[in-house]
Length: 446
Image (cartoon, rainbow, N blue to C red; front, side, top):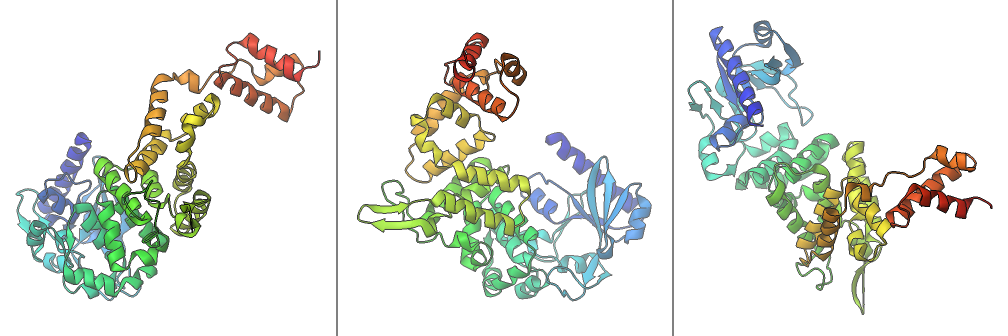
């Protein structure tokens, strides 16, 4: 990780130096400046320059005109891609996403069109000097996310900036400036004009890069949450039995889990786990029953799977992510039965794909409620004790072996092999001879 970061910085410096050697201005801009000033190693480096796109493409051997219409060229340097953008101003935004046209401009004019002050800082990477036209240094010191200029205008230009503002506040542990937060609240319905893919990406960053609880609290406070994830907003006020959930309602339970998850894993939180934490109890809203014996949530897992599936489709999850989240939700209540499982059932459970994520989800579920980790410890103990072959025993007999013994080819072969594995997992078959004896006894006539 360190070597790659050093390579990226070195590549970005080469680009700036080469642009300047050919008579152009060039600076680092945006998140890389913000993070450097915070003492955090940037993941990427964006560069702005007075050179127009054709000049940029003429100065570097490997370039890709990814956004040439908007003055953006991708420059490949030492195996890494870098966005190099020409200073520009924007015309009217007609679709809540992109300007209708652009004009090449000065460095100051370029900064004034950007979203938030902490992202509007320029840095001379050769000297370390910072150029601040928008008060970004002061906001960085105060840990405030504030729009550059009028917040309403900034959000009308690109509706997604409302969600990005919340995301930055969450990930950086900053606050939203009062006028910025009020503008988001006033115009929250505009978020519905943003594509599902862009919304999904920002929510996932809130979930995985840090400050997930604060992020979702801000989404709720501003009214964004009830527009993009009403199923999560509805968790508020859904009571739970105090015996198992002393923390309170389903919303508080979910927020506690997100808080613990972020503190332990961000910014490297597995996305499937994060989404499963957020959605594992969404079925409780419509399955809650209150009677003389208390509060119950019969069938909440099955109902939650359906709701989560709808959300995954609406937000355009990849197939892999959707399937992994669904499996995590499907099995999250199975841990309560692990001590009652037969050896074969327990072993099948412990060897499920992504079982480390299942364990983490269960642990968070416990820590966000009653705090009892007996079932978690039970599974961990068996995982530590069982060898790989105990969970994945090699077959004593193959399909060909069964045919040679006289079993007719067909579906029955697979059924017998599954039964043989069941006997192995139960430790009732421990050799090839015992497997053959089992087949003769149960599937072959004398």
